[in-house]
Image 1 (tube, rainbow, N blue to C red):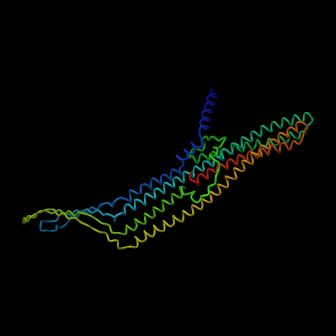
Image 2 (tube, one colour; image 1 turned 90 degrees about the vertical axis):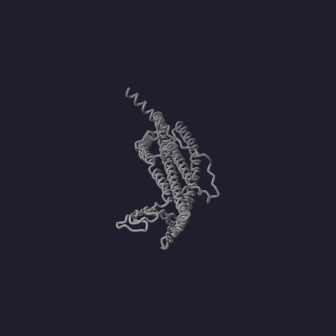
Image 3 (tube, rainbow, N blue to C red; image 1 turned 60 degrees about the vertical axis):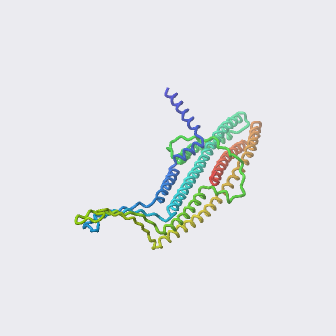
Length: 409
């Protein structure tokens, strides 16, 4: 009964593993990866900046109580309340809000870039998982073929058409393949650990190693308008937003150097006189006020303007640098993609020819005891082509993922 339950649980786990597609893994990574979550939190924090810089300064309330009463014509002045609200120059708050909003949009583009770069990393490790799975599969198939070769060599030895050394040669190859399969299966643990780290999952989390990679959606066609290829890349958009933010900061800095206007009210508490009764005896005094700040110390305002100008210039230069790096990475990705496609086509042809050669060699060996060492060599050459094609398919998938990342697709 326990064995049956264990088998059922294994089937459930296998079903769960196979149900996970690459898109599922990408979704999990986007939701759980700490680097992506940190960049999104930075964006959320940047969004909180706009309400801070677009609000009016807090009003000032001043309360004065006189230790020794001040005599006025209408009575003693006992206390005074002053309320003042300062207003920045027209357009200052809007410029500050625009600068903060644009910087928040730049933070959002940074979040998108971090997420897309994570997707590229997940796809790269996913492709490595495919290569490893295929290599193990080809080695296991090779072991089955070697077992068949061993039976054939034994049969030839019994019939007097072959030497016992052919059986020994097969056993040597079988030992090599058995060790290689064990090493490849051990490698699965480290690859699974790296993959789960990108997903921010437990390192023991079961991961389905793919039997095939998603096929390319369309044949690769190189574009001639390369300069405009990266205009929609998050890094480029981030720098555009930062440049615009620095321009808005410059506008705000200029306006901060203009006078601030203040509107206020003075309210004085007057007590009634007892020695005489003048008109409006004891009437409290209300006095409107208007104040103007005098920005006469100009160095700090000029420095703010210069700071914004230099930051905008820096962002423009950085944009050129980023575009150059994206262009260089794109050219390399295109080369890797073309090379991988050519290698896949070549190894496909070589495998077809190798298969025909093995059939001919086996036929000759069965009939007259031909060169068995050549049969083994050709079988190993077939294995090399199989694993090389799997590697080329991995390289093509990674190059395509990198190309899509660079083109923001």
